[in-house]
Length: 403
Image (cartoon, rainbow, N blue to C red; front, top):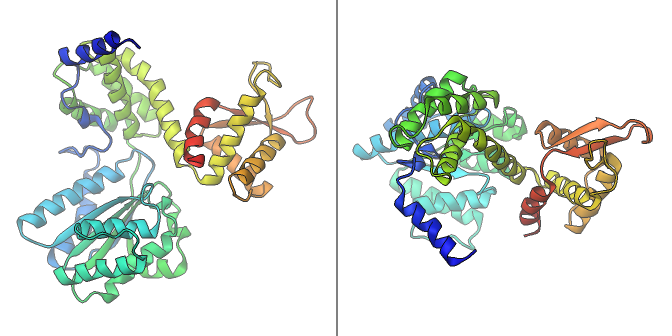
């Protein structure tokens, strides 16, 4: 691209006012001043953590619900208010938020906690046991009431050992305490804990239901007031984004991403306001973002399987196709390609039974489709069709698996 063209883009962004007032207000990670349609959950979680203010250890809490039901924002909202209240009254309450998709081992969880409590210490290269003892020493010495939030806790390797260690630490503390808030999309998460951990956990469970269309619209209206300039987003755009999100199992994160992307498109086009047309254009981009994010978060064996199929589709372009011209992959070809790639990556391939389970899960996520083969195929052969760009799948998974 010529330098003049680049400067033209930069100048256009500097000169125009744009539709946004505070773009961050439309981010799913933003903590608003008001959480409509989650008043009951805010109250319940506040009641649960409140004993920490009088020196008592609160119950551990496990929060469940589908993506975009407000689990994380409610938790961070309540703990932010808790921290402000405790600070005003000089009560030694500390909260540590940990995303287990990033910090996915017991060691990295303890390092994260250690850095929050002891910012001047260097924990690199130290044993997990030593870091654990340093954390306990600080909690005991300063009589800290520590709350550890483990978001996406199902992504944590060695989940039972980590939860058990944090919970049983209270047996070694004469002063201070450690409490856990676990957040997960997996409703059966508790079943994955070993019996020893479950017996000592003593947790409360909260289930967050999906938002309805009315709730989603209210959320978008509130965020739009903070995020957009006055008159820079139409009521129709908000209503359409809410309606689309309602069809996506009441996913507020999806609704916010739609409106944010629509705003970006409006600015790219030099429009003075976000319209329904911009939301329509944003829908395709957001759905692609969500699928790519989902693919990055899949278990490793499912990622290997998906990468093998993407490579197979790309290699077979112009060969076997359905009547529509789409590439055909048989289940046998997919398993063979997956097994070969797994070995190349130094992993043991799973059995045929687990392979079929993974195929079913990927189909459930809407990443691929599986149908029984008709004429021209042997026996119970199934054919598999990728529902998403094999090029984009390969780009993402090459980076994740091979880097």
